[in-house]
Amino acid sequence: MIFAAIIDYTPEKTKITELRPLHREYLAGLKKEGKVVLSGPIVGDSGGIIVYQTETVEETEQLMRNDPFGRGGVFVSWVIRPWNLILVNREFLPA
Image 1: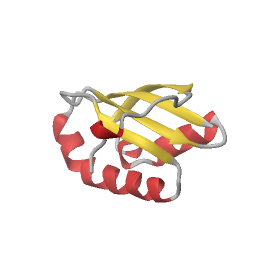
Image 2: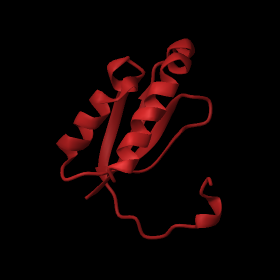
Image 3: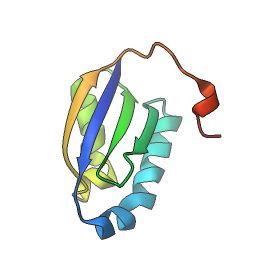
Image 4: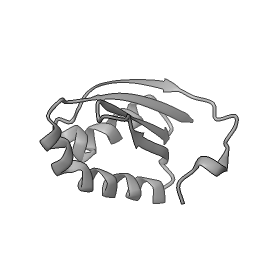
């Protein structure tokens, strides 16, 4: 099942900057495993959106807690919702 996580970040920008390389490495690994569909920060680093492919919302939440942003206190709150991917405009996807 696909789950969309809408995440609020800490306002501590230095913490975000420090942990971002590890966070992105973690997400790249989950992508290779087929567990991340897409991800990206909200402009201004107030939060982010990550779309996961997992069996349950609990698995999604565990992946978030294991994320360096989750362990390091960057993720301060989130909402996880089941999501149906209907349409993709590939022209807007990064290379």
